[in-house]
Length: 261
Image (cartoon, rainbow, N blue to C red):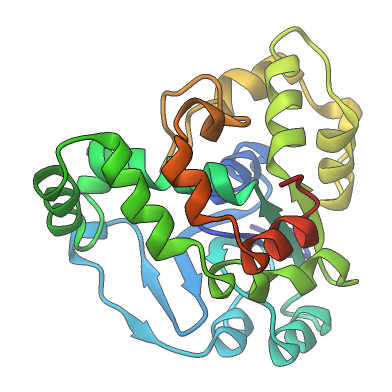
């Protein structure tokens, strides 16, 4: 489009990246490139099963963006990437939105998505991963324990943490955003949504909250049908799950992102 900005919808995996992405798409100011950028590569999500991985450092991938476009991303912080984010020229002025979520809920979301979602089956390698969790474990408790053990390390979360304090980023807490999207159904546009829309240089008064709700709620590329998405780990975790994250490394992760242990 002719808008003089481009948007990167960035997030920690299973934290709501494609919720942010859907909101940006609904705002209809930028063209959706159907591209997903990661730290080491970018890929085309239109044909996920046959994705070609295009090896490219994140800073170079982001430099390919042009005004009027938007993409999804899982981009940990690095100084070179941040430097690219702040560069403004006639072709590229980046608006960077970063979403994060309680890490414990990301474990549950990942387990459910990989094990049960038809959408995950369409991902590259999805059939293999889905069959592994379905056939190697007899119940969700064991599946979840496996997921937590694999994904509880700080390397999955802390590399994203500097975005919380970057001047070239608009951080959004999933829990706050999700509450406000639900309130939008009754015609209320809350401060989190309003500030996000202002950051994207759109007048919040031009937004119909009810239309926003019906257009984005559970409509994202990787959306699940679970209604209670805040603190859902409390409904899944057993003693063995809590034991897996009862360590200083994981407590630091929670503290840095502002969650109670």
